[in-house]
Length: 155
Image (cartoon, rainbow, N blue to C red):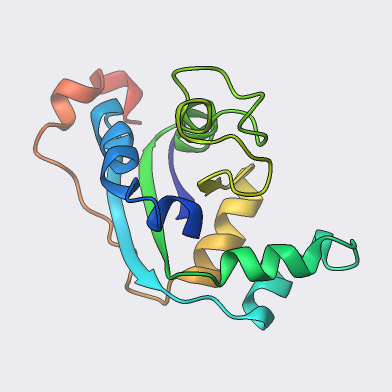
């Protein structure tokens, strides 16, 4: 199934100059960029995005971390994009993420783990609406689509 998922390049990737290297991994895999923008996050948006963590004692450190620099939000599209992006991303804790994954190669932290990726279809839908306005995620077909998928995989 063709899906669209959200990725956030966190301040730990922006400040370290890793955005291009990480973005190329998604493109190299064959995922299509359907939306991308740089933005600053504020506490109300972070409270919504991390609603499941708001009452945890470490939430203020998440806010400090996620507001340290602008972030880049990305809508990626492809067959099984959500699970594919999660596999490329690796375990949340960079020290536990396998080499070859984004976090495994670029992170030594549980919090400063360079990237966020939607964990499910319902999360992706909600997160894309949270970070992109209507019309900012574009439905388009790349010219190389026939070299990315068999025809039977596109239905």
